[in-house]
Image (cartoon, rainbow, N blue to C red; front, side):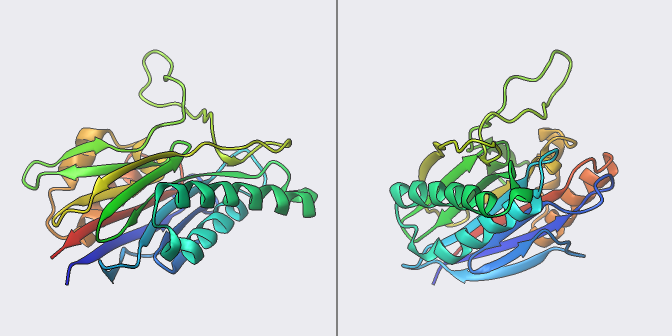
Length: 250
């Protein structure tokens, strides 16, 4: 039977004093904490969908770690029921409502928010989704991999001379007055051998795409995940680093 292999890790980087990222892999979550090394999980690729998602709590806002944790836990709990684009869209809007309802119940959480990006994998298709600037890539090729961006970056063009910007134009939560969200969604066929990278901008901001692609030439995804993390650390580790490498195997 085909299966899904997911190698993942989450780390606060070198500058942040705590981790505001969270991760959902199937029913498993890693919320606002740190892994010492990549963890690999295997799931059958059958009739039950498997969700893999990264949520990056908004820096400069209160309780980013709460926002990302609530989102990851909701997606992990609902993942097996996400069979269509409409299912994913409804669930992400429910995540958005959950953040605002939590903030209404606790004023200390007012304005908290998070980005989210991920995949829902089933035997028939792969659903790609995101809100914000966390990203999903398809990894094409092996000896000289090419990264193809599948998510839609909710950020304005960076200033002249810069490759990235820290401005995000759409998030779950993140405002005092409730705001609805329109997730970005796309459907791909589920193909044996397909590989994907799901990550927060703590990886993609400090490490340029060509370096990411070169590191993904490693045949062992657990090793590749470690090398990606190390590249972000060696580039200064300015933000929380969370990533998941996903592979469909026969």
